[in-house]
Amino acid sequence: MPSEHILKAFDEELKRLDNLIARMGGLAETQLARAVEALERRDGELAAKVVEDDRAIDELEHEIDIASVRMLALRQPMAADLRSVIAALKISSDLERIGDYAANVAKRSIALSQAPLIAATGVVPRMARLAQAMIKDVLDSYGLRDVDRAVAVWHRDQEIDDMYTGLFRELLTYMMEDPRNIGPCTHLLFIAKNIERIGDHATNIAETVHFMVTGKRLWEARPKGDTTAYAVVAPKEGKEV
Amino acid sequence: MPSEHILKAFDEELKRLDNLIARMGGLAETQLARAVEALERRDGELAAKVVEDDRAIDELEHEIDIASVRMLALRQPMAADLRSVIAALKISSDLERIGDYAANVAKRSIALSQAPLIAATGVVPRMARLAQAMIKDVLDSYGLRDVDRAVAVWHRDQEIDDMYTGLFRELLTYMMEDPRNIGPCTHLLFIAKNIERIGDHATNIAETVHFMVTGKRLWEARPKGDTTAYAVVAPKEGKEV
Image (cartoon, rainbow over all chains, first blue to last red):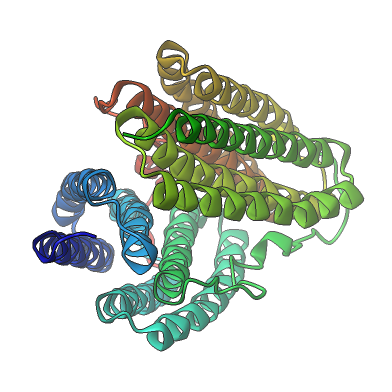
């Protein structure tokens, strides 16, 4: 049997892991907020800073990986403790991707700051605020081991997907109206897609929290992805290009 | 000390894990090939099949997760063995994403099959073949624990990124030429982006194999992502829309 001393050490390491995840999540949330701020204010300097700061998130992921693997090796946790360590590994990888997407939003906002303003830009910050709230809530659900909160985040992804689908169609009409919009609208399309993907990763984290706490999969028809992949924007008459 | 019996059981479980990863990788590779075939042949039926079959990859991921966590719990592996199990967890999550991207390519090819043919469609299969080769080679590097092969895959990602960047610019010009191209070109843009992301995930797997075998990170300026995020396609004169 493990001694009380070892149990206490493990609990402290687990708390440290929780802490690292919380910090990483906070960074990811902030990076997204700053990227969108850079987009709204057309602030290339801020955007460049966001791109640069992505490195800090990558470093935290590595730190969490090292800490998790070390705990698996030295403490050989079982059952719920084991699931917690595995969850940390999975969540850090989702947060790393969220950071990447935020950095990509920032990069594209640099290009956009040199292009004419597109009216639809306003939808993007709304989408981003939703995504930010999802990141925040899902990290709370992790910190509190609160399954209900995780499930609520999981369901909320649909809202972002719907906004994305609407924006997708709107941007296509802008492009068709004026070819000069095509460049900036394409960037905006990818920015929106990045935010939609951030929502997917928050959904992943919700699934991980569910598994961590209950030991069971949150498995129904997963509300994944947007539906624009099926959107047919056919021209009036067929034409071979 | 663990008995020989336990060591043998662990080796067998590890072999089974390798096998699951190999199978999952094979499925992912095939899914990408079929999705691109559906795109080239404008075959909506095949595309629908690809979308449906994504479920098999998701199931394999779950199987690998369960097997890995079970091994961590029951066998409490150390050092290289521990890294192997962690690697399986990480690789299965990359392969699951590759499957998702292949399914998305298939979905979009359904929409494209109803639109006029775009000349640039030909670049996409070339990109896809590169991505497929990367998946195949990186899985070989995993099976053989061959670091050199993994590093070679890691470097090859640049080629896909370059093709993507070229295609991105080409597609923008098609869109500008004729607004009827905007819908199909947008789908093609996302298809190419999906394939570019598949290359990124192959790169991730290469990094994981490197860490698994050497215990060290493959860490330089990682050849990640495309550069089109910075592409400025500014109109001749500024115009507020």
